[in-house]
Image (cartoon, rainbow, N blue to C red; front, side, top):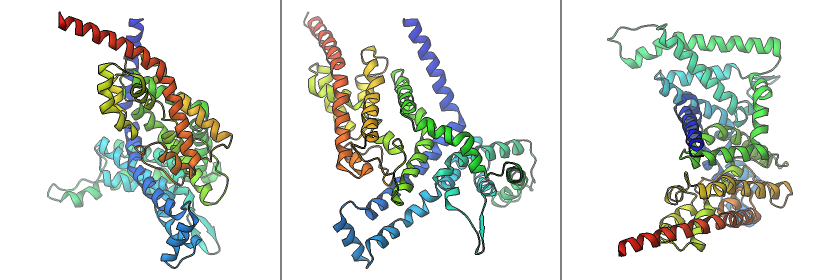
Length: 431
């Protein structure tokens, strides 16, 4: 059994290293992290514009001599300037990160990515003229933006490494020579994307966004947006944690783009006063699917009597109120601790199933997508904010109690073992 565990740990360790060293996965992860602050900033404005207390909403609108509807529209300007162009923001962030990883001209790669992306984006033409449909560069296009960023960086690097560029004399300042050196690589990249656009227009009769969503976007959303899919993803992340590998870092790098697209669909529906389409989104993942390990420290607070756990209560309880679990993960420890393998792997599954069921049965309003709070927001507060209902906070409390119950018997077993060890150690010292 020990050999099997060692081999399994070694295999997962290699997998983790492969993920962590993969520049494309890191670029996606870092690009999405760069995008995240804007989701929170926008959420603040949308909360104010759609405040749940009508009298407060009316009072704020009256300060600017506006109606409630006009007030909401004015605050939505921030959304239109950020999340409404979410695909473009992700494109910029991922392409710049990739360029830095590849050690090529970051500014030129970033600008070339924007032009290439826009080459693939068709304009709509009416009698009034041509215009860009904002949805083609919004959060719905995040998958395509990531793909374009990677393709541009790879092609640009290949040309750059072959030395196919205009070389300026050494005396020319870098600020002048750099744009000239990037001229040929950027020209080739943009030409290739233009040819691809012609092929799509003449043969597929689809835009790049439509084609990508048909082939990959829809299946990815179906996987990430299903109950079975999110359970498997969460269990895989927890399994990595068990072997001392930062599971969230690996899983989030792959799943965040999917959850963000689902989140944006909910937000768009909410703003249009339509039915919210997705149970699973970034808000579900952060606010409900991640209630699990928190049960361990609070089970320890409730029933543990050993000296080790008594000391750990003092340092691990308060951080976990803000979803900071490292003191618990390393303090118990949960890694490679067979006693806690089952609750570590399945406690999150309990909260996922409870939450999904409550949303599916319409016992709790679905997360609106209007609000995306930081992952450090305490439960109850985050549940209320993302659903716009006190029932969202109550659901989190139910999940919280449920995961504590899952952890209690295992904590009791571990605590007894530790007390025996501490007693034996005390007897040795007395001798």
